[in-house]
Amino acid sequence: MKIKMSGDMMFSLRKLALLGAVGQPVKLSSVHFAEAIKSSVQTAGRRLQELEREGFVHR
Image (tube, rainbow, N blue to C red; front, side, top):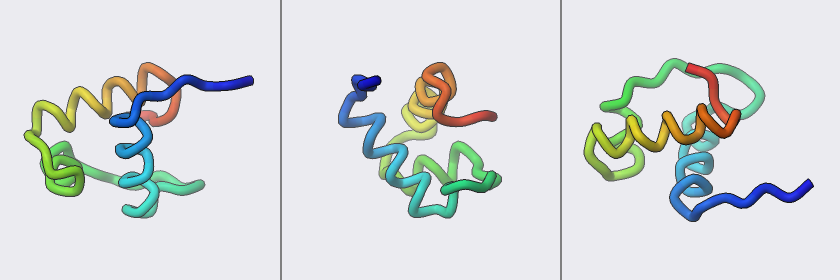
């Protein structure tokens, strides 16, 4: 099964992995995630929502 993923989603998943979210849950605020991906808090929130909608993260 192939998953079609945007570059933004891939980048966001990679950043989450670098923050320790591989095989274990991590607590992460939208502000901290925004800083990690160098974006606004609104963009970070949208990225997290998209990842959640696709089943990659649970919030």
